[in-house]
Image 1: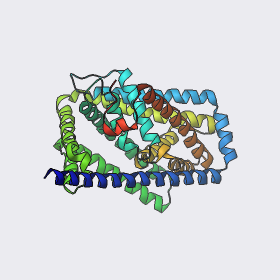
Image 2: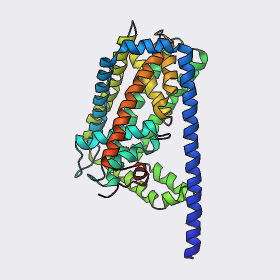
Image 3: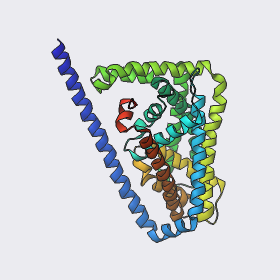
Image 4: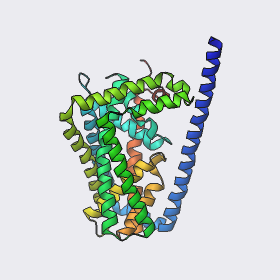
Length: 356
């Protein structure tokens, strides 16, 4: 009986490993496609124009850009702190490095968005229990989803109603608006009705022998942190407003960041154009986060918006390239923090840190 159970477990492990390989292969394919798209856009706009715009932006301005993004990181870190249930508590010196590590994972690793939340929870595992950390990350992400959905909805409506778009793009934007509204409504209903979507999906996958070795015990942990999330909404309604304010501040700073860049590489920057460019960039971040550094796709989105609002395609691609430099810098800082703390990718995948 035990031998049969071991054989079945080994078979499930092999299937899980095979599916993981397929996911990694998909991530690598998306990366190569993004690189190809990036070089196509650079070639279309002209490398000389992009280099000239970057030179005009200058190194001192880039340092200021890094500072603006660090404040954005602090806003997400503060929102996460408020998402941790008592008696547990995290300080800025806990959450800021953890957010940077999570950003590094989601930016550098193909399909890294799937492990960035776990990376944050692992990073603070010595401060609070792992399940508490993971549930607080999920709670903060739900608030982030609410605020971001509103931000994207307003951006899509503004773009489609103020500017003249091709019919194909009009349909695309309208579909995007409908999709955002549906996601917003589903998340709202999920929280109000306390639907256990994640644990239900895990149970169905486990029954069909998908990711069996992971879900053998993992599905119960998923149910546990779902309960922790829902208990947070019942227990701390007074925190909703402050968390949403921090999430909103994160997006406002994103608009400031775009305006700051445009003011140095464009002759006619406006907050409306900055808002549209940031909202489209945020949409691309959500849809194509599985592509490392969003290479190619971010440039394509900025190219489209810049052309639509008559900023010039070179300005749009340059904007995305400069912001990519900012992403690279802070991703390297996140990797440096990981190295100094002595834990590796394997610790993130296993949800455990090396014991000191």
